[in-house]
Image 1 (cartoon, rainbow, N blue to C red):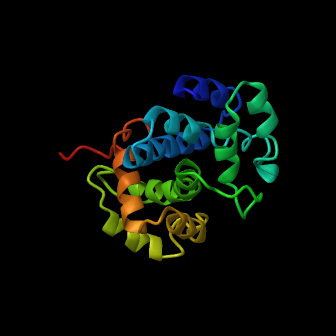
Image 2 (image 1 turned 45 degrees about the vertical axis):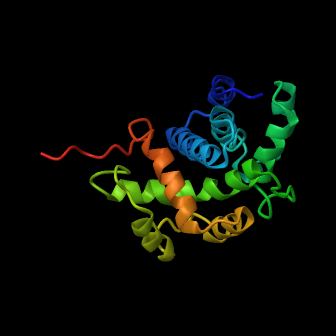
Length: 189
């Protein structure tokens, strides 16, 4: 089973851009929270989340086309590689998310981008953020415009969950890592 330590070793060997590292941490944190929600192995899901954009920096126009072989060659379990590939469903490939892990990764990948953007606007960062405020931003298509809302909604539907509930889970997961992801906010004076 993929460990978080191994995922970081693999990902950090190819990812050098800070914003991509932060995104990996955001997805890692959200996936850990989703694992807890489903009663699954938190560290394992966090590892898959951290590694999900393995080839993006090197191949942004061919994202996920250079993921499967290198990760399998590195000893990553085929089920974990499949979960990573499934986050490109309908956008890049036809690997349909089937397991809760796959559906969660598909959903939170884009959702964490909106949470990150909203957290940057708030003096408190992600601390105390509520899903209600996030949903208002979500509805404004100009806000974090590059985040695919259709994918998030489709993922929530796949999970059989409301957007508000998935958002709340992800916010709480990311809040645990607020310092690490740069969303701890500024202390009140």
